[in-house]
Length: 312
Image (cartoon, rainbow, N blue to C red):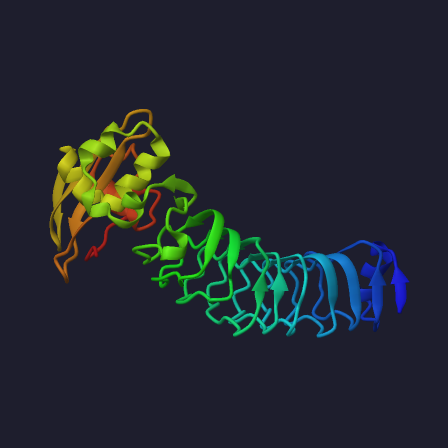
């Protein structure tokens, strides 16, 4: 076993020298040209974010925290991996977690292809962040009790298994979840970071424009509008028409609604040419015309450059 300081250990790894290697403290390799770690690596904390790692050594030992954020090539982790906190943000090649994983805190934010849970693993009363895991369809039954559970942006996730408990909050913003299991009855809810009621999260059809406009909290009001749907809210709120014209989908209108202590809601009301479904697409408050709104939606900074043959 080679005992090295963090600086010497960094040079050791960059030179491709073998292990086993014991680092006295934190080993920081963030952003460096590292594609492989030596076997038998032991340290208190490891940061290998933004590296070219495809996997970690089977016998790696990290006491406190492993940071693997933005390791775009990372495909797998060793079975039985144990550490305090494991951060895997934006590891877009990672499909599944290993069997026997044992951590306190787990962050898989923006792991867009992740969808595989092991049969056996453990998160010990810490937090689990799965924000924007867009391929994720299920949650494991072995979570047990967590401090926080962030599911915002998990668009294919429709249920939370019964038996799971949280001591703080659950964020269900942008998911397909329509109710909490009995084990989470009364748990505080969030919608993309904003504290909300069960009615706002799960029964948006009961909301009205009158209630939304009476809401003093701007963040809560924005979520309520999102949950109602911009078009229904604009219709009920009596939006002011700023401009009108037509496109292949039919008539379109630029609508404006003033909001107390917040920027105005301005949106383009239009229809899809193929389905005839109506939409209200929000645009910057300073927008003045339907064409300007359509140009902004299409990604044009200068509306004069936007001349589509068919707008969809």
